[in-house]
Amino acid sequence: MFSLRAEFDITVTGQKMLVVKKDSLSPLHPTYLIEGSFVSYQLQGDWRGGDYSIHSGGTVAAQVKVEKTSFLAGDYLVETADGADISTIVCLVMVLDEEQWQFQNL
Image 1 (cartoon, rainbow, N blue to C red):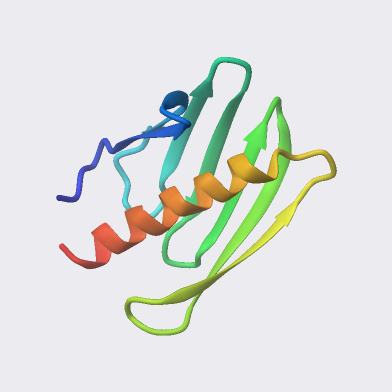
Image 2: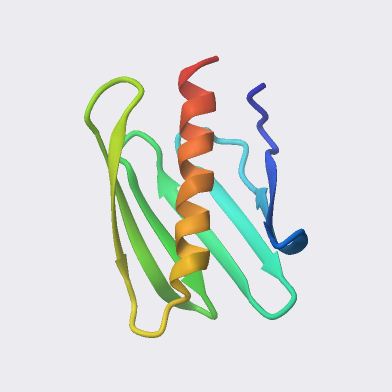
């Protein structure tokens, strides 16, 4: 079920590492707050244009571009900053994918 205040837990070997919470009510310009024990991120974007940015500590950790290839499928182009935590970025892109799938299948 689609939720305007979605929340996702990212776990590694059964231990919760990050909590991703949707912070905005706008489905077209979503904002997510990501909190972990040692790190926090903010993910912002434009659902219609498919452009997202992931920020950590005031700097851009990654830029994400979603290119839809069909109604239910697409490609994710991710450009990361030097030193970015790639596994965390991939997890956040998976959250984007889940949210977009839920939004399209209302």
